[in-house]
Length: 132
Image (cartoon, rainbow, N blue to C red; front, side, top):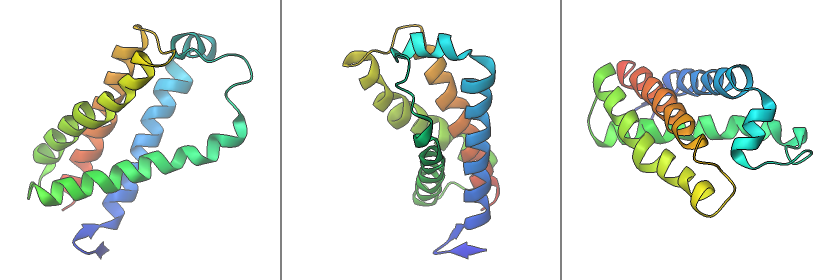
């Protein structure tokens, strides 16, 4: 199933994988109180009513990765992986640094967040690239 040269199933699969990896990292591996301390959140700040909006980020990321992979003319799992890793550092992680420089994120959170972007975007890029 394609739309303007993009494989919709690959984008959906990549978004689901990003969401699942994020769940494992931020809900299973890191205890809530530790996460709150690393990000500077205070009790009651993480309003559960916002959680459904969390599905938007993986979808937009997967669409963006599909666009960049297409623009680079980089089909294949390894090309998709390398595209995902580049985008993870150049856009995902660099944007998240605002939370450290101007916000409450701690230095301990930086490698976790970088790892999160590398794994999520790398795997998503590999899925989309392989499915081209």
